[in-house]
Every structure is written in C-alpha cells, then in structure tokens.
Image 1 (cartoon, rainbow, N blue to C red):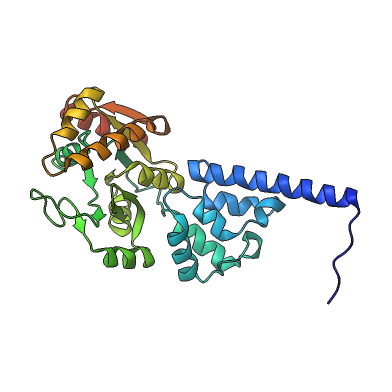
Image 2: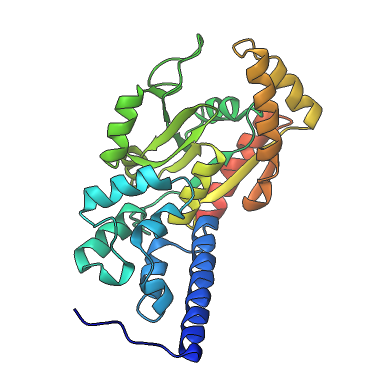
Amino acid sequence: MRKPPVLTEAERAAALAKARTSRTHRAEIKAKVRAGSLTVEQVLDLASSDEAVAKMRVSELLESMSGVGKVRAIAILDRIGISRTRRVMGLGHHQRSALIKEFSIPRDNNHDGALVVLSGPGGVGKSTVSKEIREHDDFWVSVSATTRKPRHTESHGVDYIYMSDEEFDRAITNNYFLEWAAFAGARYGTPRQPVLDALSEGKDVLLEIDIEGAKQVKANWPDAILVFLEPPSWEELVSRLEGRATDSPARRAERLVLAQEEMAQSPFFDHILVNDQVEHVVASLIRLAHSQRS
C-alpha cells in the first residue's frame, strides 16, 4: 500500500482551508435547496463545474430538501439503486435521470392547468375553503392521504384518504406521493398521479396542504402559486382552535404554539389572503389561477 504524501505545514494549512471553504459552500447550496431556490436538477448541473458540489454525497443533497429527511432519502436511494455513499460526481446517466424525475412534475405547456397550493395555520379555515371551491368548476381539489384518525364528520375518500402507518410507509417506498410531511403527530401526503392527470387535462388544481409540503411542491414546481391563508386576527384563530371539541386541552395548547410558528412562515408564500369571508377567498384563488394562464 502506498503511503500518503507527507505535506508541509503550508500545504496542510492550504488543504484545511480548502476543506473549510468547500464545507461552507456545500452548506450554502443545501440551504438554497431547503429554501426551494435550487432544484435537484440545478444542483446536479452545478456539479459539472463546481468541485465542492461534485463531491457532495447524494444522500446529503436529498436530506437537505424540505420534508425529505434521512428515512425518505434512504428509501429513494434504495429504490433508484444508488449507493448510500455515492457522491454526486459518481452518478450514472440513468441514476441522474431517475433523481430528476423523482423530484419533478412533468409538464405539457400546451394543456396544463395552474397548480395552486393553499396553506396556513391550523384552524384558519383551509378545509372550509377547499369544500367551497369544490362547488366550482374552475378547480379540481386534491384529496390528501393521512395517518390520523377520521373525525366523526369526515368520510374516507372525500375529506381524506385514511391510511395506517404501514400503508403510508409502503406508499412512500412506491413513490406514491407528490409531497408528504409530518404534522401534529400524523403524516399527510398528496397522491401524485391524480394531480398530474388533472393538470394534463387542463384543469386548475388546488392542494390544501401543510407548510412543509408547500415548500416541497415549490422546490419541484417553481410555477406553483403558493397562497398563505391568514385569520382575520390572532384572537379569532385562538377562538377557533379552542373551540375544537375533538381536541384535548393539551392538544389545543400544542396547536396554539404550532400556529404561532406557522404564522411566521407567511413570507415564503407568493400571496397572502385573509379569511374574513370564504367566498372572497375562493374568488381570489380563481383569479390567481386564471391570471397565471392568461
């Protein structure tokens, strides 16, 4: 075995400085991926001219994406057939294509409708807006899957697609979801294919999802219109959350803390609508979708 070269003090210092610069640069790239300002495809393209990016592990790249994390990253790598230690520069053509496809939504610019994502704090009235907009022909509204138990007023396939944890795990492995995230002790995900089918038919699509899911969609579909729904006032939101008979007092307290964190995320969104009247919110969503296609 060849012995490693003996470096001078100056060479060692230069090597350490280069390593620190590379780590800082990779951290900046991953922060941009997490924020949705860089897509997986753009990072893979950077690797051809950026040594620091080329030497990044693929698992690092995937874990930096909002809502992915270690478990989903490993599942994706295993399904595609990429070693968990593979670096970006070592990806083959088919592996690269599979990764890009994993985190992108195919588009047909001649026929696609607009993709509108509605999010906001719990209790703000997102479900009420979604139910109202279903009455209009302007939108197809996606039905999310979830591992939480149904409330007594909810129906399977109408309000949510209810799954066990095992079923949800299999769906992740099979790339069933366009996005998924954990929220308030349960997991939620958007079935991929129905959304793609509706868009390809020229329908405008509404996703009512949580904030982490919205960030995932924006990262992979930059043209998506992200709408943050705000309550008329903080006091009104508190009143709504405290009035939920299905939640325990401890759960309501948790939701209030979470709602404060969610309200702070509004600057990430393209538009902010105040839910003072549901019909006004619905009309605004329709206008936003139409304006993108005009």
